Image (cartoon, rainbow, N blue to C red; front, side, top):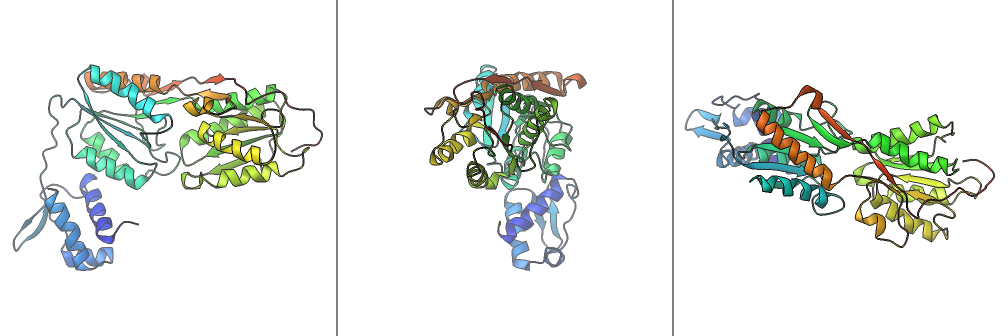
Amino acid sequence: MAPKYIQVKQEILSWIHSCKLEPQSQLPSEHEMSEQFAVSRQTVRQALGELVQEGWLFRIQGKGTFVATRDHKQPEDPRTIGVVTTYISDYIFPSIVQGIESKLSRQGYKLLLSSTGNDPEQERQCLEMLLSQPLSGIIIEPTKSGERNPNLNYYLTVENRQIPYLMINARYEEMDAPCLRLDDEKGGFLAAEHLIKLGHRRLAGFFKTDDMQGILRMKGFVAAHRKYGVTLHPNAVTTYRTEEKNELPLQRASQLLAMETGERPTGWVTYNDELAVRLLDIVRSANLSIPQDLSLVGFDDSFLATATEIKLTTIRHPKEELGLRAADTMLSMIKEKGYREEDRQWIIPPELIVRESTGPAQAMSGGF
């Protein structure tokens, strides 16, 4: 948890960004704020001191502390685009960023890159940083989009300043922002359908549900069972949050593999290729083979899908293409000073890539 003075500082900043405190308005006294936040006056003084140094507040001797007037008028064309993703240097994200950068740089724009680590607190810091810069627009992947957005006030500030912004990969449910994403629900459906058509009737799914991508992929997984009349066992779906991704799905996979041969699932659908590759080790440790004993489907068609001796069947994520289209969309939004209502959401159809990790279900008795 952040130090207390940082928490106080963040709360005061949220008052400013949400216009609860207008420019030139006076803050409560140090004594009043120390009681309000249940902290010492020294803690309040330290928070206020940093905000004064950063230009958010100013002091008048003998009168108190006031909100500074900050000129947020954007230059005609600052030629800088803020880009925020959950990660930058690993998995599919370098390709997405490369797509954005290649298009925007050719048009003379600079990128201001940052990442959140899928942590709302880091997202808040990224948004604070961006709001202190002159920007032409913002391309952002929301953090933990499957949960309540704790940084709503910052997004409202972006809107109030009329900074064009585009969400990629997902969108907060409470935000009516333009969004460019893959059809994750259809992707989850295609993954399960592929296994069902191969004769698998005992499937298990692993989905990270603090992101909308995982929620939608799980929804498609369930929908495929319903369409084909395949029974979905109540314990067949494992859900987890970002903080649990290194342990919980692996523990659950081990439990599934410990079941009797006629009872354990014969096909797994995973949230992404990263998890699928990690689950390969669990399957090996159980002395089982893929796809003879178990068929495995990943998601994203990342470099990991072909990096192991077992090449993964997976759902293709457009990656660099998504980045290129995001850049094109942002350029259009800047030029048109907005977007057309019918273009509020762009959904890219998924593609199933069949490789070695899936095969026909073996004839086994019993039921999962």
